[in-house]
Amino acid sequence: MPLDPHRVLAHRFQPVEQTYGPRDAMLYALGIGYGRQTPSAAELDFLFEERLKVPPTFAVTLGFKSIRDENLGIDFARVVHSEQQLILHQPLPPTARVVCHLRVPRLVDRGADKGAMLYLEREVRDADSQALYATSTMVSYCRGDGGFRAEPEAAPAAMSVPNTPCEQAFDATLPDNAAFIYRLSGDYNPLHVNPAFASQAGFQKPILHGLLLLGEAGRLALGAYGGHAPERMRSIQCRFTRPTFAGDAIEVGFWRLPEDPLGEPDTLALAFRVRVPLRGETALDNGLVRFRAS
Image (tube, rainbow, N blue to C red; front, top):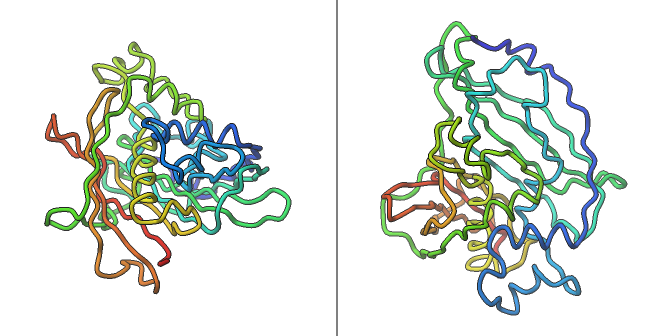
């Protein structure tokens, strides 16, 4: 059944307040791979409260609110998280009280047989000063809710990854407890830990959080290209294409681009992709991470 676009676009979300501290930031850092091996001095900065830096992608966990909690008339049984974009306006401090404002700025009707794409934007601001830390946009693919416009719309063009060997590739193995650690940063969807729930959703076993993979890629990019300096990351985005599972060995490849696709000067732009070589699958594609030039 097609959704009502006017109802969805006009929906008013209640602001979400959240207070976090060093423990939350360090727990998130563990969830995306910091400390999995003996950390370097620069990596220790994300795990040690006395000189703590906050991973930029921690922002995707702040003010998290599932659209399942809202009365939007969507068939949530057929909704999947398909894309994510994060814009960093300034570094997150180790401790803060934030307020998050949510809205649906865009709906794309792919047709009655193809579903719809819902864009949920979340601004993360300091609750006292209203300083803007980050803008996070989650794209949900609503497979049962297309057909609400007279003509279907084309999907927005995705960032293309070059058809050449990558400049750098990093191998990692996702530990057996990866989902149990990552969920403690706020995403308690049972799909990631409960075998019975995963089976009902059509999976042989629980799948890992897509945002865990985004965090892994962001961690590796920050170390290899951003000097472990959170203030240098401008943005990161990707498309989730295949599920990953605990124990998977992944390969994260990066391609240096000749210019910034968004046209900002003094910007280092990198395409990236996450593969599961053993299955010959691409789990995360169309990735773009951007850094302020040093």
